[in-house]
Image (tube, rainbow, N blue to C red; front, side, top):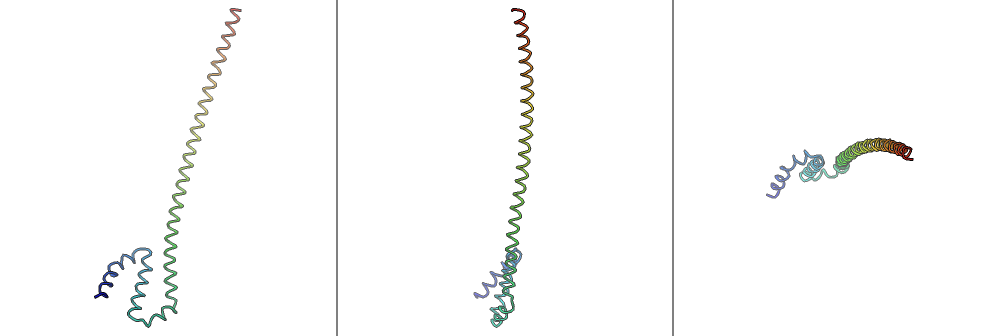
Length: 129
């Protein structure tokens, strides 16, 4: 009865695990364990034939692939953030340039107004003095 329960529990989850990236290695491991429970004499052949090392290599490649996907996603987010930062800095520079131009125009206007006032003061001094 426990044999039936174990195989049913694994049977339902086997396809889900095999479909997932890391589940493929687990499915291969489960197949190896099942074959060893059915025929224990295959254990020396399994260990000497390199199957164990091959399965470890496959699982390692799956894990490395997942890590590489995570790294690539993180790198992509970093690049997008840098592009947004460059765009915002460019907007700030343009805004500062425009503000500087407006200040220059205002200063020129004030200078001309001040010169006009000084000229009229000189004219008033000449008339009264």
